[in-house]
Amino acid sequence: MILSKLLLDWKSLKSLSIKGVYGIHKLIYSLFPGEKRSFLFYDRPECRFGKEILILSEMQPLLPPVGILQSKVIPDSFLENSSYAFQIMLNAVKRNSEGKLVPIIGKEEAAAWFLSKQNSWGFEVIQDSFEVFETGVQIFEKGETKITQSKASFRGVLRVTDRSVFKQSFEQGIGRGKAFGFGLLQLIKTN
Image (cartoon, rainbow, N blue to C red; front, side, top):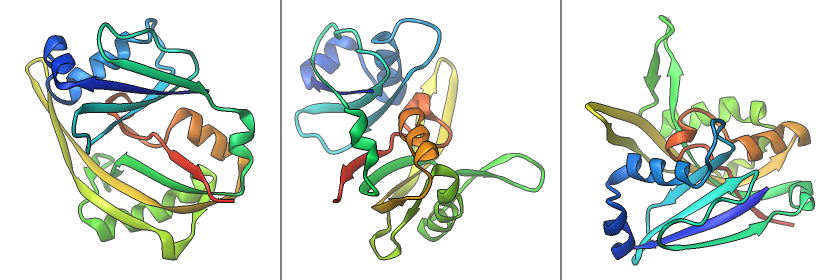
C-alpha cells in the first residue's frame, strides 16, 4: 500500500475550480485512471494554507496538475502491531425496520453504533481512550442533485482481534461513502 499526501494551496484550489467535497472527489479520481476504485482518501479539515488530503492506494497516484504530492510505501510489517492509536471519519448510517438507510444522530448514538460494529472490522477499542469528536453532515452538489451524508469522527486506541479482517479494513476502508472521503482508518503504532 502507498500513503500519499496531496497539498493544495489556495491558488491551486482556485486554478482547479475545486468547490467542496465533489470537487475533491473528482480530483482524486483523476489521479487513478481506470474503472475500479483502488484508493481511499481523507480531506483534513484543519489546514491553514489550503487543503491537505491523505490518500491510501494500491498503486502510485498520477501527479496532479498543480500542488505537491508526497508518497511513501507502507511496509507490510506496519500492520503487524497489536494496538494502534486511530482516527476515522465514517458515513454514520444504519438500516431502519423498513430497510432504509437512516442517519446516526448525536455522539452517544454514534459511539454505540461504532462499538457494535468494531468486531466486524477486526479490532476492539480500548474504552477509556475512545472518543466521538465530531458529528454532523457533509453536503455537496453532484450535478443538479444535492447529496447529504451523515458523518461522525472517532479516535482512540484499538487492539487488533482478527489480523486478516483488520488488514482488510485498513486497505479497503470501513463503511459507506468511501468515494467521498469516508472510511480511511488512520493509524499510529502504539507499541
